[in-house]
Length: 285
Image (cartoon, rainbow, N blue to C red; front, side, top):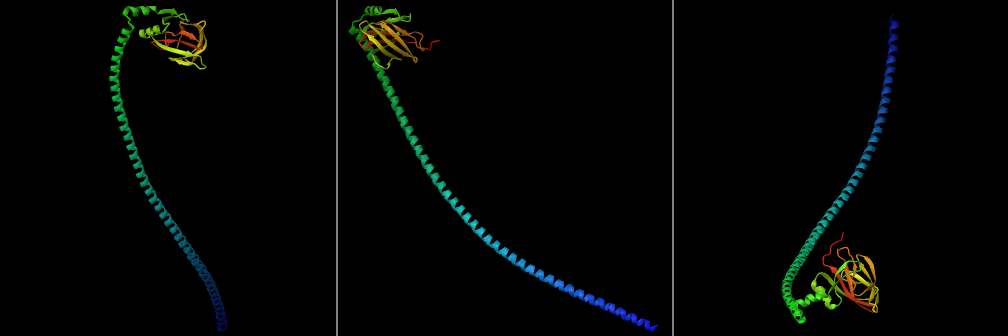
């Protein structure tokens, strides 16, 4: 029975040895693997350190360049600000100077205008005094003229009676008609109508008479006839083959009564007479 026990113990020892040997081999293999992994990690760490160092260097350089650029830009902005301030001060001084010059100029103009106004007022006062003197002189002249003419009240009445009232070419009875210079002067003295004398030669363009224009087209001294064109209110009206001392009538927009042209003399290429217009001139309906 003792011989059967010993062989069983020898077999168990061999298994343990094999297991131990396998464990040792596995441990060695694990150590080799770990060593290789550690070596690779060291390599990666070294590369990472190098990369980080390079990146830091680049960042420092970039930061330095950016800082310098920013500093230069700030310096440039400061310089621009200083220049702008100087220009603003200069412009403000210039504007102030120009404003003062303008104010001085305006003050000079005001002083000049005031002097002119004072002078004008003085002239008006002098003119008023002169006018009063002239009125007195004219009154004296009228008395003198009456005296020189030797015209009594009865003679004056007779001269007015000599003036005629006739019907004009429009069928409207005219005012008094003057046939000579003396009667024209009497018409002016009566003051019933405005009297404008004219001496109208033949021409290519209308001639101004009062507030109208006349154009002599034809003059026939042998038969005392004439033809004229009347320009009034931008309209032209022909008065053909009229005779001397005939009231040639026409209307204008601003008068109820007609205007009248009376020709006293017809000469070669010339007529002499007067224009008679109403005192009251308003727009006709």
